[in-house]
Each structure stands twice: as structure tokens, then as C-alpha cells.
Image 1 (cartoon, helix red, strand yellow):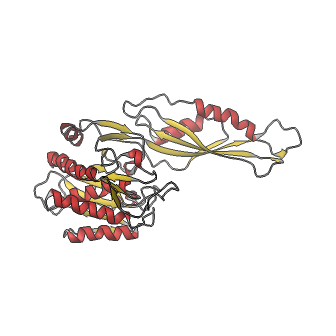
Image 2 (cartoon, rainbow, N blue to C red; image 1 turned 45 degrees about the horizontal axis):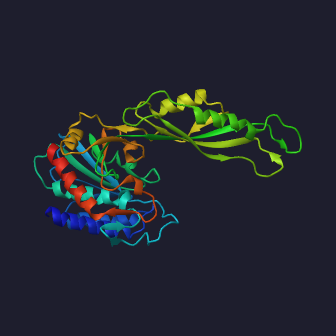
Length: 354
């Protein structure tokens, strides 16, 4: 299939995927449509839950493996949509629909790229493609569940909208549940240990606290209190205040480092991480994949948003058509030209290293 036909087929696949609801953990029907792509192109594949994967025709266990991954689940549409989120609408060169930008355009572009290289002999890398589930919810049945099943991965391209620029680093994420305690009592009586008032100094501490190590590409660690909850009735002083703290971790700290620092320093009664597995990601600038991207005119940067890179232990590059600022917005769209360019650039990039 030539590049023009490959792009046309990928765009049609994306249109079909848009019109099939695929919220996280409910991707069974888009998984079926993805299976059809591989069947039509005579590519053997395997399915694990709602994850579809395949390897290149001349897979060689003695060679390193390069993963091409993106996801086919979506968030739920917000109330701001003026167009049907489950209708693929093309207007003025834009393809509208839920998941078009995040990350359907990336997924179909990577699948087209894999198809282009599938039957080529004497590649320097094996290719492994995974159309994964549950990325938006960081679920247990997504890419992380595939790592023990697919061949060992040495380097990865994770398809997320980056305007086809090279995201060589990505912030990790740790969410903490914190508690500030006090003495419960009746609102009519004096109380010098009100948990809500006690939380004021704690909130000020979180607002002012700074992690010392700054990343060249990702900047500082970003800590934000995002939720607060206390009290159930107007005349009762609660025993405690619950806080949720969102920490976006740069490549200078491990998630375990962040947890250790906050548990030793934060002036609250307890602070417990929900998970430590969503780590920051990076790929060395000298890696052949990055150098190949630079050679074809792509720029490098650090990404503040989380992706399935967080579950990978190998070097990984985030790269894909579309714009991250459109993700999760009302009337989400991707330009048709971005998909065409994405496929061409993916192929150009991989040709340099394969």
C-alpha cells in the first residue's frame, strides 16, 4: 500500500473509531474494529482483554525491539460539546469527534506506520505495536498489563499529541491523601483545636513548599492541593480535614523520593501516596531515535502531561500528530493534514534507524 492509500485507510479507521464509544475499560468494540485493520492487511495479531498487539513479520529474538504504542480508550465527553462527540465530522480540514486528537490520530498513524514496515526484511529493530486500553484511567488492564506478555522492549514511541515534536521527558504523577486532625465538638462551645483552622497552616505550607531539584527539560516538581473535604453538619466541628495533593514529578526525583520527602516534612497528621508506579520518563538526547528526529527537523521538549510512558522502564519518546491543548476539550478535533504528516514523519524517522 502506497503512502497515500495508507493515509486514506488510517483516516477512515479513525472515523470509525470515533463513532464507537470506548470509555476506559469499555473498549471492546473499538478493539474489534482494530482487529479488522490487521485482518485486512494480513497481519497476525493477538488480543489480551481490550489490548491488540502484533510483531513484524521477520521478528528476530536476537534483535532489540521497538514498541509503537497508543491507546484507543477515551474520557467521557464534557457538557460543552456543540457537535455529536460520537459522529466523525469533517469541516474545513478538521476531523471532529471524541478521541480524534487524544489519541486516535496518533494510534491510527502508528498502526499505518507499523503496517508500512511489517513485511520488510533485515530491520535493525523488531517492531511491536500495541493498541492499548485504559490509558485515560491508568487502569490495570492497559499497557502495564501487556508488558509481561509482549516481547522485551528496548525503546518505545508512545503516541500522544505533540505536534510531531519530540517529547524526550515526561513528568510522573503521585497523588496523596492527607489528613489534618483536630478535636471534634459542638460549634457552640470554645475549641482551640479546630481541624479546619488547623488545615490553614498546612495549606499554606503546601502552597509555599518547593522541591529543590529543577529539571532542564521539565522544570520544577509541581505540587497542587486539588481537593479538600471536612464536616457533615453546620453545628459540629469535625475531627479531621481530608486533602488530596497532586504532585507532578520531574526527572530529578523518583516517586519514592517524593513520598519520602513529603512524609517527613509535610505538617499534617498523615500523608499517604495512592500509587508510586506512574514515574517520570525520559530518553537520552544521544539516543539514535532522538538524533534521527532532530535530523528531520523535529524539536525536543519536556512534557508536563502523563501518558503510558509512565509504566515503561525502557527509554521512551512521546511523539504524535495533534495538539495536547485540544485533549479533553469540547468539540475535540484533529486536522486531516496532521494525520497525513504524522504517518509520513513516523516513516521518515524510523527509516533512519531501521
